Amino acid sequence: MASAAGAVLHNWRLKLSALGLAIFLWWLVQTEPRNSETFSSIPILVEVADSVWTLAGPPIPAMAELRLGGPAREIFRLARAGTTLRVPIESVGSPDTLISLLREWVGLGEGTGLTVVSVSPASIRVSLEPAITVTLPLALRVLGEVPSDLALASQLVVSPSSVRIRGPASRLAGLDSVLLVPFDLQSVEQSGIFNVQVDTTGFVGAIVVPATSTLTVRVEDQVVRTLPALLVRVDAEGIGAELIVDPLAIAVQLTGARTLVTALDPNLVRIWVQPDQLQGMAEGEERQVRVQLEGVPELVTAVPEPDIVTVRRVVDPDVGGARGGR
Image (cartoon, rainbow, N blue to C red):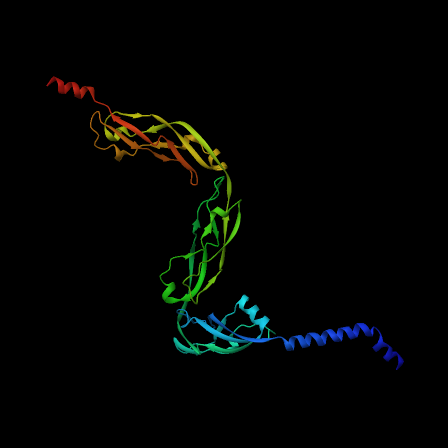
């Protein structure tokens, strides 16, 4: 008996302090000011469990107004964190359904002490339609260009290149691709693999798998290289007369990723004048025409210097002599 009493009295000051703290916290919670607050523009999310059906559009209305009661600090927390009203539909009896909103569908979190005083509107109208599943390719969208000291060393690669999307038949039947959220190339500082979200704008009630794709970007230092004195080619046989080109050879400035630019064989670059630009030339006539380039790989920018040449059709002396003798 004495040992039991000793156990109770052992560290009695510490135990008494703990008891006092517990009583104080209980009193603090009980006396914490309670409040009520109205939350407007709360999103209404409809979740259709019936795999045969899906939403044809957003619910009407798509937002709710909630009046909540509870501890002021919890109301303040919820105001910052936000909440939603989730409407579950287990089975579909009609494509056009009126659903009464229940208070327990409001997400408040566990143990918050908050209660839903009222929900407005009392009901929403939901339109549904048969669902289909399709596989569609992803369409990449980019903004801007890589920083000026860098250049793309290979084409951008999206993986996976397609997604499966389940949604309303009326919206998916006419689609030929699914867009990705635009990717800002200006943000690239080095080669890497970046996550890009699928753009689900306008896909109300649709499920996209996967919802995220990866984009492989390979960059290198940007370099400039000049190919001097490349011959300008002109199809004189197609004109049926001798042609003189001035200048006969021009330089080409290449800009791009170091590997692509330095590995380029100048013998593969062809500078030429389109024959249709020279059709109908009279003897002695001169034309200024823009040259064309071939043999330059993608992602390399090639600028001929100059990009315009003068082509002159030579006067045929035999024809001129024959005319003079008449």
